[in-house]
Length: 112
Length: 117
Image (tube, helix red, strand yellow):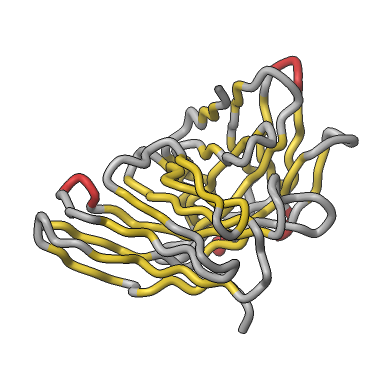
């Protein structure tokens, strides 16, 4: 069965600082991996996705993520955080079997 | 505007009442799904559908029914609401699954906040 672990429930960073949100997945073969962002009271918006090929993927709003098969990880990064990035971030995985499994989320707070 | 429309946005029920959460999309998406979101538990898949007339269970299907009589609509039914079903419900759709080939992605509705007293 596929699963996702986001070990950090809350993260606080200062505006302008770099950010890394951790995501570890469990799946037997090469997974399809996603990062979504949810602002308060809103639905989820796709930041980026990994299907195959280049293991460093670029997304919207200046985010990037790196797929590391050896570590079963797909960490999200941003070099300089903006106050508007404060939100909840979800990592998700699927093996293609019609089910998308989400992690429990990481709440990001940005200090001005 | 094109997208996924969920109604109602808010609902309060008493234990044992029934209701239907509506989800409609106008993008001709084959894949539709329902999630519930609870604090500390992320989003959990309730039911999904890969096309009209086809539905299947997700991680937490108990207490919920779905049907898919048209491509556009995917209603979620609570036959006898329980306090454990207090949650925020999201409908999501995509043209195919897994979403992500080319510019394909999973579109989410804005959610329905349900309280069961």
